[in-house]
Image 1 (cartoon, rainbow, N blue to C red):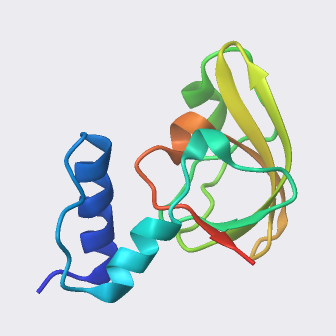
Image 2: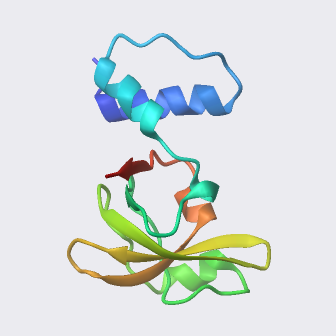
Length: 123
């Protein structure tokens, strides 16, 4: 049996590859996929739940985003974040997010680190 989160990720991968909407026998995973957001289109002032561990940084860096994030601890899976700013630096979109769980605080995440996640907008 496939867990709902795994099923949702499979459905999103198929959708991103251009496949028609695959059938799903699990209504919960279908709802997750329908609510998933494109990482490049997050909106300032909205809250989102991240599905995976997410590398973050203390500031957006015009250099290599991967090198910048090596020194920081990742945001844990299932964390809720509030997007407070969106900038584009050296062709990469960065979001300043307020992390609502432990440890709380302000971090920067790039659209690169949000790829392959199920990002669900919350009320």
